[in-house]
Image (cartoon, rainbow, N blue to C red; front, side, top):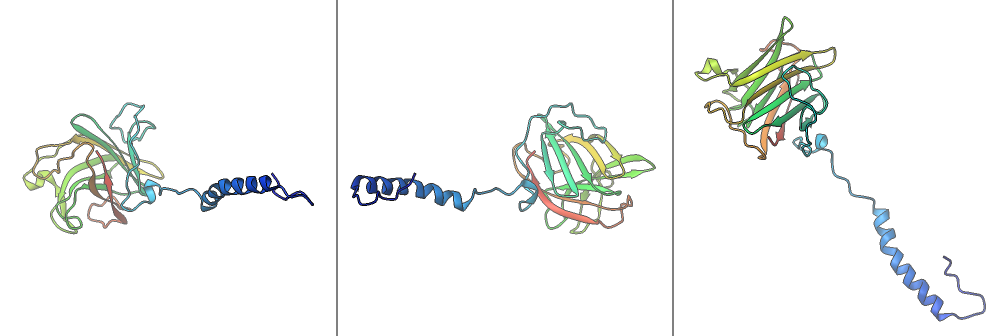
Length: 216
């Protein structure tokens, strides 16, 4: 609509109408020019905050393969990913890296690795070995619970390695009752540590590690 006054004529009503239209349009133009606020994606947000959960559409199986729709939750940390879903009293999880070595996750660490309840997976002669472990120091060691007067509380596990990824799946109770296992609470945020190596040698140093948060 043009607001140019008609030549040689005075039209007060038209000037008033133009002013009203201009005032009505101005806020909309200002908002549009500012752009739409965006929310950082979970994988790029500090600490790796997981996205909202979804309803799983596939049956969970401990076979070392992350099937589309198998997990309700996913935490993407670049070359390391966690997938999980909780039942009434257990948590089922997959930890996956873009490397050809061991993969690990630790629940509720203290200082660095100290007091972390860990699950450590590696491949040996094509067979998956997944252990319930506990770290006693800031940088380890983290030996199996069974070697620390406790119990291995993994109900099931499996692993698979492809040309590009290494994946380990496992299930454990949310609260195992083991003194070296951290009780997990559904719908309650929990800090984690994660790492993976380029070798299956458990004594080899991690090539990549970090921190994150999950909600079982």
